[in-house]
Each structure stands twice: as structure tokens, then as C-alpha cells.
Length: 238
Image (cartoon, rainbow, N blue to C red; front, side, top):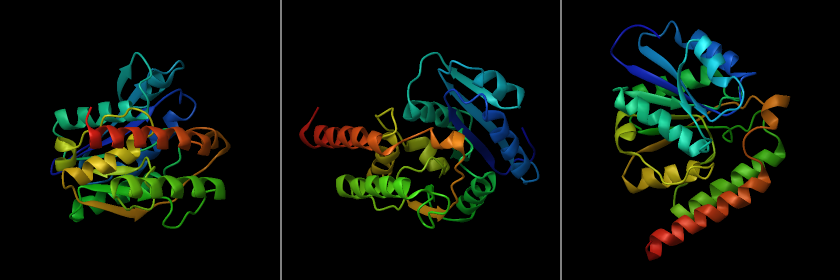
């Protein structure tokens, strides 16, 4: 979906029942990336949607990978990154399908990773918390604290869906959970294999639509429970 060759960048969007907004998300990315001096491809992983997400994404110019069944955010993200790894992309970015992420922030993350020395760059909404409600700030800070306590990974926004991956991360990083808890587990696995982590500030775009999507603070308890179980299992054996 683009031009020159020095860098190949995959823009991965896990999506579940996002037909009403996915087209706008894709168009926004195309506007931000179209004049960049590298090749990019937008990959939408339709995670068992029951609406026309795949059709809208395809019509908007994205490559579409369709799951027959809903596997969860972690499963859909793994599929998209596996595609990027298998097709020899040098960098991959993941972002949410609900329009929460500014395409300019995605591009800034990609160029930051290109020019830096990190393997996994997280777009943090909590370095400024602009646009986030107090409830969401509290929930995300709590999960980041749990991530630090359980896994020794200290980041400000462990649940961010905007992440940029180097070639080394694409080749080596894997995780075992398939729901939202994968956000924290991914950081743990990155630490285990010695990947260099970094963060950069982004703004969160919350609309009436996006506010009802994704995680909520009640779901955080299920995430914590799964993470504790995963940690205990690996400490004391399968």
C-alpha cells in the first residue's frame, strides 16, 4: 500500500464488530502515512465479527485476516504480528480499531523506533492523561502497578493498545494469554527475553462510541486474576 523499500512497516488493527468506525481509522492512517519514505501496509484482523467489519476494511484498502471465531484481543494481535513477521516487515505497530489513537501518534511512534534503540515502544496515555477520565486513569494505573509487582516491569500505561515493535520483537516475542491480559503478559515476556522497552506520550481520543468499547475497571479484576494465575503456574510448574 505504498512506496519505497528501506523500511517495511505493518500497521496492525485487531477489530471486533467495528464496521461503523474501521473505515475512518484506515483512512486516517493512510493520510498520515502516504507521504512517508517507506513502504507500509494496513492489516486488519477481524476477530470473528458479526457485522461488516471485514468488508468495510477491505473496501478501504486494508489487508484483512478473518478469524472465524472470536479469540480475544491477545489472539487477534498475535495473528497480525505473525503476519508481519512472516512477510518480512521491519517494524509493526498495533492500534485500537475504535478510533482512540491519533494516526499522527502512530506515525511518531514508528519514526521514534526507527531512530532509537528500543525493541518495544509503548504509546502511553498516562504520561499526560489528556482526554482520559479519572476512572480510566485510576484503572490503568492500578493495572500498571500490578504489572510491576507481578513481573517487575515498570511502565506508566501497561494496557495501551498502541505499541511499536522492532524486527527483533517480531521475531522473538510471544505470549500465552488471549484476552486483554496479554497487554501485561507481553511486557513480561519482553523482559524475559531481554528486549529493550520504551514509552512515549500519546493522547487518547474518547468518543461516545469508544467509551463503551475495550476494557472497564470491573474487567480489570478478571485481568488481575488471570495474570496472578499465570505467574503462579510458571513459578511452581505447569
